[in-house]
Length: 388
Image (tube, rainbow, N blue to C red):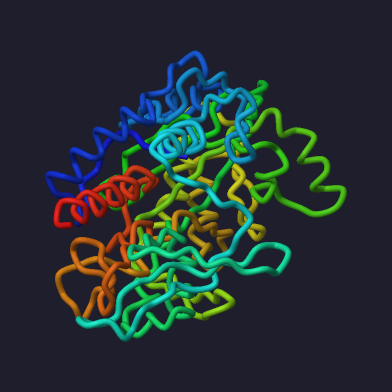
């Protein structure tokens, strides 16, 4: 789901892509979330940022009519979230598209004997019952995502570029919670409600994000009975998350089974630690009585000074790091030695294969890349149609 505070430039940005971004914002009905549905978690983030003088605002989201159900990650119960089945697929079906579900693409079919070099001929898919189906087409648009596109191309005999699967970014992220003397009830409101851009120049975005209780317990200290006692007080917790625009330092391996390798760079490790301090400071500024760090060795602090002293003993190895929004593993670019796809998103070495997912982005966006991916896909498609 899209969530950011405003548009951002990106290395793939060009006039057509910027126009596509504006068009997509209209299609997805992107707008800042109104204050009345943010929930206390977001309002506390705004209050803390105001006290510190930090830039913060409600996030821009594709959820017109949102009622603050805080169930975005498991499915919007009111239909406010403009997922593709509401915003894009109906138009595609009206234009004649046929949607085949429950079918896994085994490989891209390639005609290697045609004059002029290899060309796409369609795809081979396998149904749940084990039967197979060939869908024939001279154009194949690959949109399997940054983690599945490289294995698909390898299974298809199209994985020869040395940079395919490399250049992986994953938006490393951590969470911190603050305990308040009054109910917060973070699961009522918008799941991702407020963005804090104080550390934007360092590639760090802090968000007020309150997932359903069963999905965010990793910030709580203890196990067994101790953890159960902590869970009983979750209605008084406000949670923040921070993600960083990391250097592409990961790799996707494998053909039939996807294997990942990712090494957090020292620069990005330092950014995570800086984000952790900033989130604790923000929660104390909002009135938190204690901050839960998410680090088992130093689980809680009751003052800003104590928090700083505790975090002086923490390294990135102690953090509970999550990963979101993988990008970059079939990057587009002008340099044929560094980029598996050309600037128009065409896979090098074969005609008729376009890459139009997060793998085509050459570097990590600072924000949720939904608009970046969709705008890049739109630009790739429009350029192909124009040249065809």
